[in-house]
Image (cartoon, rainbow, N blue to C red; front, side, top):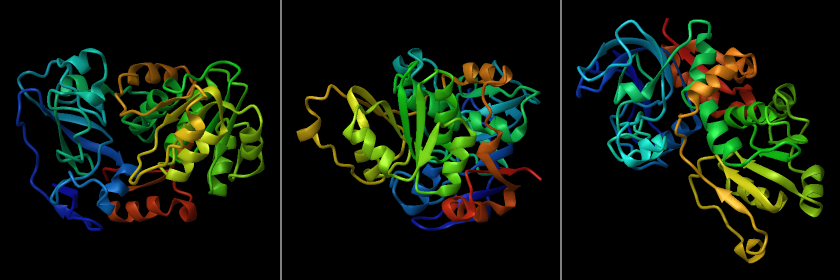
Length: 342
């Protein structure tokens, strides 16, 4: 098969690679119909995650067709179309029993594209297939379906749910990339008083307005007014930038919530000298994808207008180009870049 292989910091290539096979009775082999590039993949390419070894196939989001299953796989069979979860879940450890699949201690967690070969390939081995795949509804378009592998569950679980978004809240989403915009879409379901999107890209701010934000701006006067005034009940940090995290601490009101979604490649300052008496709750998290069935139901009910999140679609063989398009999103206008089987 062909796959996108990591060769060390700054080096990736679309190579010929050995086809995956069943290694454990709980495995499934999935033919990748669509995959995508994530901000985490950019961090890996830069060398920010030293646990990812050279020679690893990258990627952790995909949809496709089951080609083979191990003897202990019971929920899917060859020929089934599935959404491959970005998180693998053994289903039996303490954390999996609590639906905290991202913290799996039975050999799962976030392993695809990091500790195990991932989805940016023609075929992928999916560990613990019974708990790590979801049926791909026949009515769900391919480019929409791949968003359920990670983007939408992350926005909901780590952003909206951890942030305790409630009716009447002022919600500020800092970072209007794919996950930040998904957080805008899902937060709208909870009837907040207003949603404010903050980003440095004018095109992303325009997208935020189209997708449900009440206002969208560069860091400026509106944010200063929040910092000097009543503040926001919820700040969702979706940029993974130290300055964005500090901004969230300045705009949230006493008793409010900061939900950190963004992956940070370097330390962020936590000014406890000014925060210690504000009764803030700061949450972080690894997505579990336990919410995927609920999100699929919302999609079927027409409550998730997510198609606009996919801005670029190209063949799998253009994987290296896709990384460049995605990494230069401010110039290219890229949100999610989906790569599909040709």
